[in-house]
Length: 398
Image 1 (tube, rainbow, N blue to C red):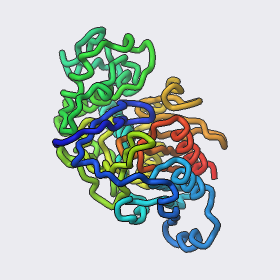
Image 2: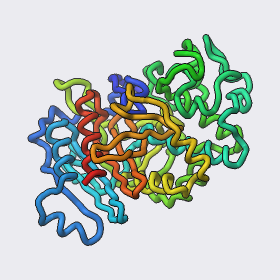
Image 3: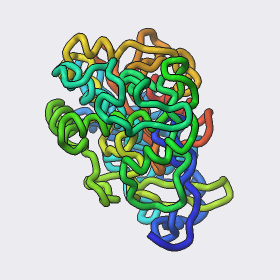
Image 4: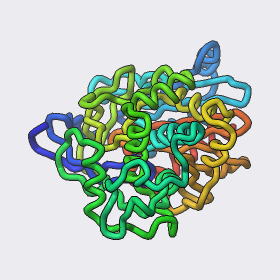
């Protein structure tokens, strides 16, 4: 991809991951200076027979939260999928799906889910643990001998558990990539990280690093002899009955099914740019996947109810360490799974993800509730991220 380039934040999680990406002008369609008043009015949609009632009734709390994300947060669109403890599902939309055409936001549309990918990868690794093909206490060198070496970095001292829980001390590759928007091989991503010193000795602290999951993905491939995408599809996507979730193939910059367009704005004074289509390979096992809110709800529910992992491995996944610095007050990080306290009591289990053009937050509870909310801009401020999380809380606590 060639042409004039512009910087775009590159991140595969909350404030996790990288901060920049450059974007060729050919892939960045200028929409023009937009104001919130120029956006189409928010709309709501509900699944099955609830849709007519929702249209006639005063907007409920979830719809009001989405309306606020569009009105006050500057995002072109917001989507939500919500499931209550009785299994009743509803979907919501607000804003505009395509600023160029003014088209509606597709109900339960596909989005780039960023670091939610990590939870899928962690499930595959833990399935291999259950099959006794991998141990959480294995060192990286057990499976990838000699690959991980650097200043303060030694794969003979870093365990699989430390990769999945971000306690390895490995530097994050994602804010150190070059300016080209192109295909990145996973080992190239790893090599980028290894040119920098360790953040800390393995097991001595916690810091979010996308490099951990690139290595986890490479271990999956080495142990199974199959591409990571195939293992995720076979072991998780199909087993959980996900119909709109996939790991894009190399070179696939598109989003297959109906989706809202994703946008980037360099500053408040610059136009919104459509960045829906881009090569996502720089995220790989740390953030490459595409899904819908309803599929994410189905995935998390299947995970928490034991349909994807045996009890021993699910318990390990839910064994957490403090992660407030990255995920907010009270948050804790397990093995590819985050717990966050809800204002109505109890915990929501999920992850969240950020990718240029999209930001998602969500979670599921042990009593069967689940919710995922997405917006069509990568959020840059703490206040905006908090607003998105409050929308999730509203959906889970209603």
